[in-house]
Amino acid sequence: MSCFLANKTLQQSPAYLMTICQEVNESLRDYVCSFSATTMITMGVTNEGVIHAFAVGATHQHLRYIIIGNLPSKLSVLYEMVHKFLKGDEVERACANSFVPPSSSLILHVIPLHDVLKAISS
Image 1 (cartoon, rainbow, N blue to C red):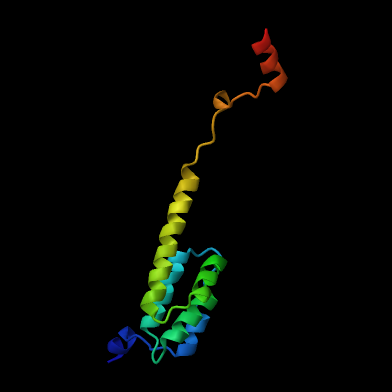
Image 2: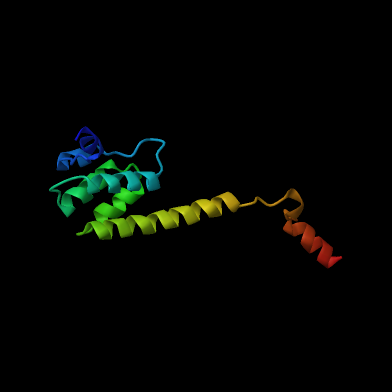
């Protein structure tokens, strides 16, 4: 009997969701995973409550602005919004990491206009 009780998942109250916040060094993807896992063990929670708790716990200000500006009515819509945001964020990060500054040999030198006109008139 004690073995069974040790393996049983404890159900959490809806208020427990408000304690799930994104840590400073936690990626948004990890926060979404931990929040999603918590919603599975939370009993008697509404879509509105889950969406509110997610928006409050997320630290990414732009994502919070998107969620509040276009408040989803279902949890599935929220996760779809977050997935699209993560995909765009990862593409942006990959582009920023692949940027190679031009070498000094490729930098064009600017010639003053009066020198160009002098060369043409001679």
